[in-house]
Length: 304
Image (cartoon, rainbow, N blue to C red; front, side, top):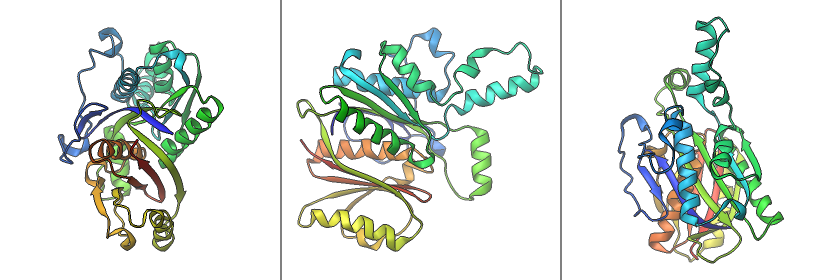
């Protein structure tokens, strides 16, 4: 699969197809996503009704679509991964139910609280009536969306797909998770890309990907080593987002994104976008290894 454009709104700011590779230095405190100006992408009357996750997701997707130069008729799918969905709208709607005794409720918060809100908003915004799917598979939501995108590209080889992931945080989520896991810092963000089967005008290639669940360091090291063995003698950049120590990886050039992604179930999408930017700048193979709890994913990227 070839990547034709990217856009990620995250703790580093906004990363897109044409921006330079950003330094891994936090722009905001507490891993809050740094929001851009939404004016070029979302009309003001719509914007004021949108939660942060929806604003970020819609803007990142439309920016990637614009950079790829594709129209609605060029697409075969819009596929999105999210673990938490639209938390703020969900909380708003449930709070209104309690306060108003389940009467005279504003439907906007309910409509925008569902997990498939972002994928639907993208389709409506660009008037694209194609396969539209949202995957809610914990910390492998983006990976499931990627598998869906892969299958749609095989089914429609002349078309392209919009692939992405979004997760936002709120005070309630932080209170719940930090009560269960002391010392974690929760991240958020939205990352999208346009993918296709053609090399023309592509910025990188996803040659292989895999994902699995394991808590066994030896098994994880073995899986990673089996992939890295294929690159013996090749200068590889390793982008990692995990906190465990895997000795087999220590000899590689490592870019550690853990401090800027934090505890984010769909942080693998941001790690992949950063890997794509590394390829644009260095023209070397990049392997992205991401984990969130026991969920691991590995993306192999190459220059075109």
